Amino acid sequence: MNTAIVPTPKLEADFYDWYARHDAKVRAAAAGNHDFVFIGDSITHLFEGDPNVPGRGERVWAEHYGCRNALNLGFGWDRTQNVLWRLDHGEFNGQTPRLVVLLIGSNNLTGTANARTNTPDEIVDGISAIIGRLAAASPASRVLLLGILPRSTVADPLRGQIIAINERLAALAAGLASVRFLDIGNCFLSADGSIPTALMNDGVHPTEAGYRLWAEAIEPIVAEACGGT
Image (cartoon, rainbow, N blue to C red; front, side, top):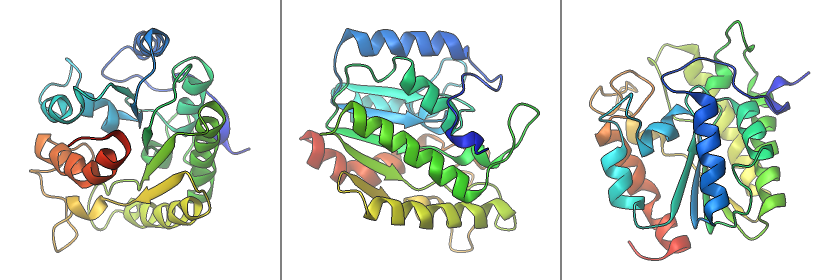
């Protein structure tokens, strides 16, 4: 069984209360439609910011998306199966955004006692299932599918798996009129393939400077979809 496509609630303990955040995001969706929705794991979560992990992307988020009617559905430690569960349980209810930015799948490469590691094909199937959920809920919305960001060291086998997944994601998006694939991973790499600590000081999560690179990299697409700069 491909666990990446089976909707599943919280699997891992992290820096925040998963169910409390879910409830808050359901309430935010119920309060009104949003023009711009981010969906993902801790990388997306910390773009908006979290009081338990200050100094990540919150200032960049406020500058770029604070006036754009944006909803952040990033949850630390989430895998594709967690996103599917959240979409099935109210976080996207009533939403017809102009643009959804989707970045998910990195945590599926890490197995724990609570969830096994998924293969690249399984992860792509999980991401495809998420795109299907979004299309069913809001057919007119465009999806900006981001390639999984590089992590760890050049020698880490995860690097090769991420490249394989992103190649599959590019092919997936090419067959879907409402989906555009963008790989911004090179923005976070030095010439030798290493990740500068100024951009990801833990090898996974962007610093404020890293989040600024992310925002700038997708700004032309955001501006096209949502208007303004």
